[in-house]
Image 1 (cartoon, one colour):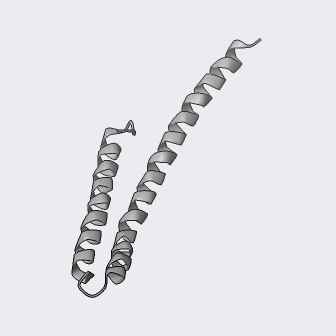
Image 2 (cartoon, one colour; image 1 turned 180 degrees about the vertical axis):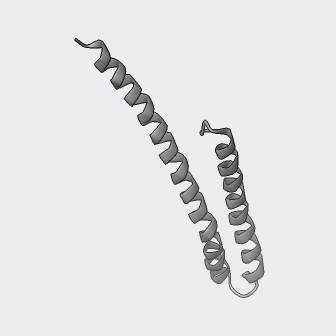
Length: 88
């Protein structure tokens, strides 16, 4: 778990799991529904069915990255303030 907040980390990881599951279920079920008509059409529709899950994963990863960046900036600010207070 990358986030330090346990509640937020649990919710985001849970939503990431749901997004990955929607990708796999959407791709497999759509492919199996359309492969009798055309293999190319089945691949195209499976990739279209995966798009909402991919967008959700990108959004959640962006949230995780921005929270990590914010935490790192807080650490750097504390260190810089410590350095400034030590100099004459």
